[in-house]
Image (cartoon, rainbow, N blue to C red; front, side, top):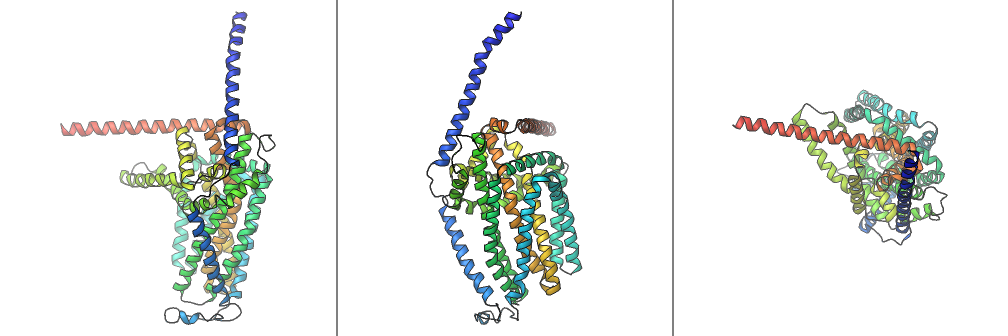
Length: 499
């Protein structure tokens, strides 16, 4: 009996060693493929959008300078008020009176962003809970203050925001434990790669330099004393530009971090012999040159589509009785899911590693997820929404700091300065948060390409991801069977009535 077992085990050992050899060969071929694609010369992608972004920066920089200088230390210094007489009200005001208020916003946003990133390392769970649960309360309190100040539009806007965040949190409560797990593992990698934190700090400084000019022009608009309609329209245009610029810088950091993390996971560690030399600098060079057009293009649409997708998924998961509402939500859901194929954050990993165009990278990433079933895990995870809530909370705190000072200096400009300062704070905190998001996207792409890459990095985390993926796939299969069963019952009922 013992002999038979020993003989069977000896017979099985060559097959086991052969499978292990095949697995190692697969790892080597995967590493070689991605190393080659990372090191090969790249073509410039989405050049049209790169040109649009650069022209927008140059043109807007000139406009900002004119708007700020026209009210700097002297009213109507550049004599442009005569072009607005007749359709805008021109009063007296100076740029330097409001510029320091935006300096407070820039300083507060920078401190909050850097502090947020540091606290994530030592108190990640508590910081995530704060991000999720405090945002609703903060929005509701600001809404009350807006109503108290007779700012009914902003009161309603903040109240709707509080309601949407609350409904979303209620809808995804069961997903938060897994989300917290993913975020904790991403933070763990952030602290093992200190260079990626330095990238975030450096790009925060770059964003601050642009905000110096942007806030100079915005302060000139606030000081111009135009009619409220004219000032708000100008500030909306400037805010859209700032949002796009901030998104481009955030996604540039995303590409740099994703490229670095992907190579670390593929090669089994930063100290591995197969790891390309100067990988971070190469990723940085590709991000700001050949792939920068793709980043500019993706930054226009990705954030809005992602936010809409989160909200629709949250509502859809809680609707069960109202068939009419469910039908409408399903229509929006399938429409947004189609857009996600062309605009998703996982494209930035493909851009970082292989230098593809944005749409090509987004389609490849989504097809990879769907072919492997990992899309079910990605859809279940709401780490991106949690990070967005952290950025939103940072923006709200920044806007509050600037708004309080504005209240004591010029109470009729509180909403104007506070809302634009909130956008500045969200962007600056988002630059710190995107480091964690870049690592999360790389983890999912690596898990879809080769799950053993995650197992080699963290066995316990790999087992938890695999177990959750198995549960989600079983859940989808059960839902699909339930839908087919109901469809069959409906068909039989209709046929019986017909007979």
